[in-house]
Length: 143
Image (cartoon, rainbow, N blue to C red; front, side, top):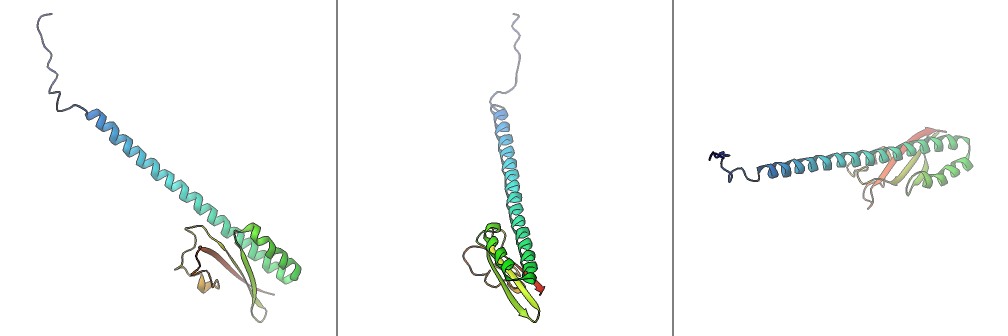
């Protein structure tokens, strides 16, 4: 060998830079993955809440139809409410004249029922101030 030396630059200043870049990239990918997971869990939670509201609307409609035909069918749907909705409470009250009001309350998801919502104005008294959040739906109908 002829005594030639290859100068590779200052080793001390670039030492560990590649490892630092990998750590930053992994941290960024982890944060993105956690954000995606959070979004997916939120979508699943809201899908379950939407399904509960859909079942409640179906049940209220069935109660209104049953109330027009007679009491035994109405009592049957009231007993089925607990299988369709968690901790369901069903009331059918007269609103004066031929009008009646079917009200359903159930244990809601954590994000579903907000205490400052307009549910109390819609005829769902009692949904505010209870320990567990409650979902509520009221349907007015004529007999």
